[in-house]
Length: 349
Image (tube, rainbow, N blue to C red; front, side, top):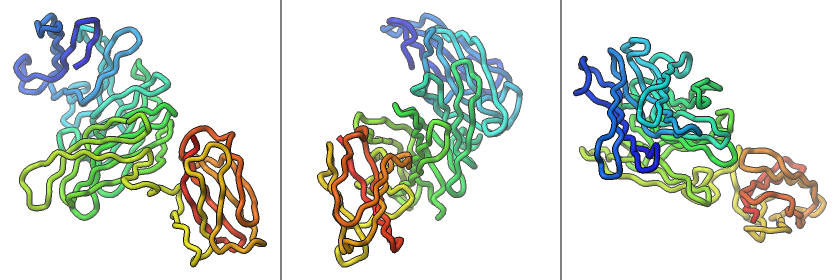
């Protein structure tokens, strides 16, 4: 459902009753604010055609949608389908794709990116039909349907992506379901850079059986709230499921560590580190446990994309000027001349 013009609402779904064949076609009904029908459009072909979740209104007021078609071209396997209509649901163009989002694929949701282009989350036909597919996929297109890139993501077994969100820094978060590797299905979160390359993935399996994440919101502080359903091993019913994690997909603080394992501050072990104050505004104090003063320590600070923003070489405890850093979350990694490393996350205000 989307407001396409002031006081005009387009309802988008599919129908079996308005077609001459037994397969579903798209249905667009425009109503006023009292629910009175103003316009009805049915669009499809001889195969099953449907739209996934989410719509995008472009700068002209047209509506862009994505889903699955078995009609264009006719195919029992189907493929990812993008449709553009005017504000009343009259189709202006439709497109299908080859490769990753070609035969056997389906789109689940479309969303807008910060650069004005669109991202589509999906998987293969089995996923689109209600299960989960071989690989989850993301594809980036412009508002004319031209493809920039399409990429598959695989953890283990089969997976599919149900929802997506474009973030202010150009990165992309998507969620869905993946094979947990033990016969169960786990909720799945993935974050990519602007080119679709994976930054991190997370799986969540609270019931060790069936767990789907179907939609999500990005909170003002960057936290991710995802919703779906779960079912226990001996349960025949589905329970609603809501999950909140931080911007790195962590249910608990400091679970992410840019390729290395975070270590607590412990003076009984090697060269470990703590920082304070945290959050910090200008000067970050770094204190080492059991580190000889003559030992040279390389301190590297990276942002959450893994990019090095500051690098120092120090001997012993020190204070670092971080006023030049933008507000956000950073990782500080230390490596001494014996090759011992440790890391800690801090927030720059």
